Image 1 (cartoon, rainbow, N blue to C red):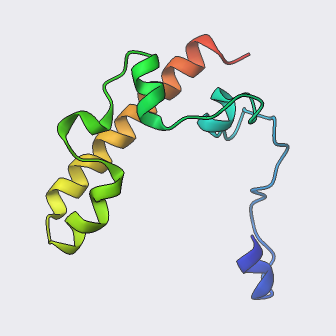
Image 2 (tube, one colour):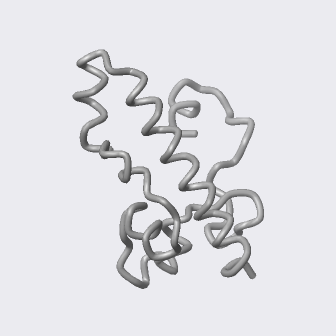
Amino acid sequence: MLRSAMLGIKPSKNFMGYRYDATRHIDLLEQLSYYKVFKSFNLDFYCHAFGIESPKTKGVTGMEVQGLYEAGRIKEVASYCARDIYATYLLYKKWDEYLRF
């Protein structure tokens, strides 16, 4: 939105809606930390807490992605990213079923 405004273009979508409205967009980290009232943790922590396989279980962590990319190991990066997306989806499903009001 800021970039659009800097370029003199009115944004077609408002990404700054009401922070606590979880009907159109949610930030799982904000939801799971109750909007930073409690300490927030990383995806790996929440996966373990909710019984979801962490993307890190296959030996690659987010800290290694840049090095893997630079080494041309793109399939490993893609595989890690896919596991990360899937774990986030499963965590969302837990939130949706048990914590959404």
